[in-house]
Each structure stands twice: as C-alpha cells, then as structure tokens.
Image (cartoon, rainbow, N blue to C red):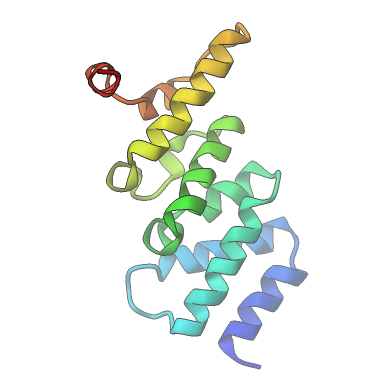
Length: 141
C-alpha cells in the first residue's frame, strides 16, 4: 500500500474526526514540499469530497492551507461561499485575502442581494467579501 492509498483509505473508511485528521495532515504539509504529486492529486480529491459534506467542521478543515495553495479557483470560491452559508467564520480559510477576486465578490454580492430581498440579515463575513462600493459604481458606468 502506498502513502496515497493509506491516506485515501483513512479518509474513506474513517469517521468525521478521522477525515478531519487526514485533511489537517494535508494542511500541515501544504507548503513544506513533503507531498508527492500523487499525494497532492489524491488530496485534492479528498478536499473536493469534504466540500460536498454538510458538516461544517469537515468543510472548514477542507478550506485550510492545502486548499489555499492547491485547490482551483472555482472549487475554492465555492468552498468559501459554502462556509458563508454554513455560518462558519471565514478566518478558517487559508489565503482568503490573497485569493479573493472579482468573481468571489460577485458571488457574495448576489448572495447578499438574495438575503436582503428575503428580509434576512447579511452576515459580517459575507459583507467582507463584497466589492468596494466605488468599484461597483465604476463597473456600472
């Protein structure tokens, strides 16, 4: 059994706590170069699986340093928005400031508009993702 097989088996066969531990291992090695290419690819699959979960602890662990460094923009943005929906503080998202882009701001603006139209509050974390007021006006010109 390879290290990749072992990691995938621990995640697949594990309970939520064990899955979180696998994701935290990936997060610990995100920047140290200790992950081989096959481990990184397997890790991306595990992160994507965790992002489909409904347990906020699992989704939060999935959006750590490994996702911050390796997850593609589309999946990363959707992970951020899922945390907003789950009301998990965005402080758990690695590299949020570095990776925040116009598309994430647009997604946040759409959600904020929906919440306001429904008479629901807009959480501070969602507000933090909104485009600056001046930028929205400039785009509308």
